[in-house]
Each structure stands twice: as structure tokens, then as C-alpha cells.
Amino acid sequence: MREQAGPHDYASAIYDLAFERWTGQLGAVKTALSKDSGLRAALDDPGRSTLDKLSVLVQTLPGGLEDDVRKFLGTLIEAGQLGQLDAILVDFERMVTRRPERRFAQVTSAVELTGAERASLQAKLAERFGADLEYQYDLDPSIIGGVYLRVGDQVIDGTVAGKLASLRDRLST
Image 1 (cartoon, helix red, strand yellow):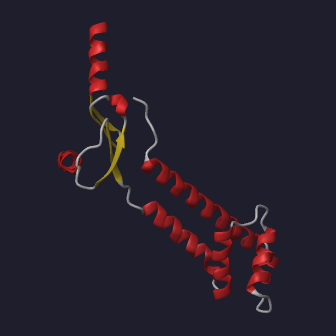
Image 2 (cartoon, one colour):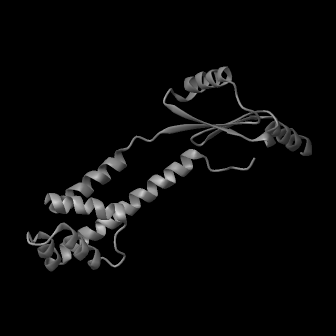
């Protein structure tokens, strides 16, 4: 059976990309502020507008800043809290690394399961793996019938295609 990425895989990739993008850009600002006392003085200058300060900041960063990160920094500058960027980054990374790991049960069937079939399957999986599972249902007509389950690194292949392949392997030996 061909393994395809599911919604959880894509969501996880988006999450990782967003985290990397934000920490990368904010980390570049943090580094620039720590290395350039002139930049720090320009950003602390009460005579400059927030837009002027943001412009100075963006010009010092080789890759610039994405719009949402720039807006966030503008909020910090306007509130006079840019000095809290280090603490914000520490808390942000702590929040991300502490996020509870969600457990998924990927259920693939040849036809759409009824509500009763899903409920029965979920009850059985909860007994075996715990009640904290989130379910992802996929259709794959190539499995002919039955259900293919993946929970973490455990696979239960109850498909007709899987049983036929197993039978073929046993007969060929």
C-alpha cells in the first residue's frame, strides 16, 4: 500500500515552518540589537516615529522581515517593549517545546465507514491505545476491503489486499 501524507503530516509541517520562520527572524533582530549599539540607540530615540524605527530595523537585516513579523515588532516598538524581545523568544520557544504531542490514529478503508462503524472502531482503539487519540479517516479503494490502521509506529493491516499479499508470500515459499 502506498503511504500518503495525511492532514496531520501537513499541519505539522506548517507548524514547524511557522515556528522556524518566526524564531529565525526574531532571532536575527535579537542578534542585530545585541551587536549594534547604534541600532539600539536609533530604536530607543523618542524623537523617531515607529515607522521610522521599523524602517531602520528592516534596513539592518539582510533578508528584511516578513510582514507579520514586522507588524509584531512595530507593536513592541510602539509600546516601548522591544527590550523584552529576549524574554518573549524564551517564552515562545518554551511554549512550543512544551506543546503536548497529539496522538493520531490513521484509519484507511476502501469505502466510507458509517457512524456506528467509526464509533465501534474508536472504542476498540481507545481500549488498546488510550482515549486520547485523534482520528483521521482516509479512503483507498485499492485495499479492496477491510481497514488499515496506523497509530504512531504501530500498524494493523486488516485489509483484503494485505491478506492476499500475505497469502501470496506464504504460497511462494
